[in-house]
Amino acid sequence: ILIHTADEKLVARWATGEVKWQAPLAQGPHAGPPLVLPDGIILTYRKGIVEHRSATDGKPIAALNVEQPLATSATSFVGRLVVTAADGTILVVDKPEAT
Image (cartoon, rainbow, N blue to C red; front, side):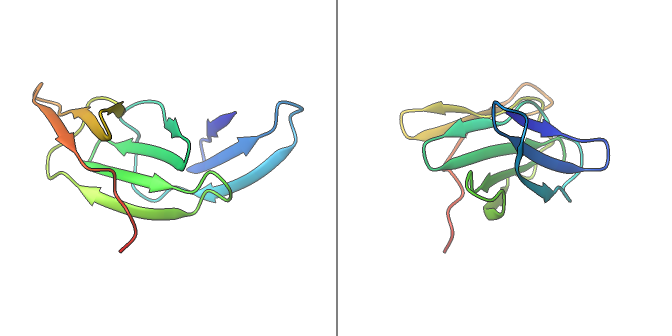
């Protein structure tokens, strides 16, 4: 279970309620719920950031600035990510990866 707290943290909890990890969020409000993938978590932020985080410890792996405010969370599509900008533009981007 992933929870975005009022004090700007992302908290992962086991089904038992025990905290697995917590990590600070510094990019501002989310554009939608996280997308959980086999190799991590994708977060989208209203200010135009798509962020890839580790599901193991919640630490950021990489981020991509799409340079447009975002309105929705990401969706996985044929190995890429689809997000919607605030003006309705549909963006297809590569998943941010560490370089």
